Image (cartoon, rainbow, N blue to C red; front, side):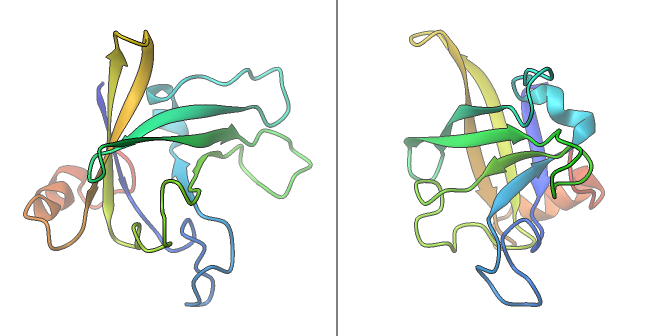
Length: 142
């Protein structure tokens, strides 16, 4: 599997009661699809790693924190895996919006000998948006 498709929702994007920037922004990763991304060391509490992601629109490599919240005593219920959206990824806080689709393409960078990801963003204005709605059957992850 080389692609991970995800529809974005307001709770991930820090929107609370319709008000933006009331919480941190992240991409919630499906537990069933978590093997698309590198595996965390499950022996650690809340293990984290940096992911190299190329934002396709900008042709720029950014680093995002990919964390596995596995501490039963923390406020993160359900063993969440999250990619946190920092300012390097979302410069002005408007790049990601509820209802947008993001698609990760995974590949092995032979020069650096590491796995990297290209992130594509699809807004309702993109001609591929309706195709993504059909492919995903309006599910959150694929």
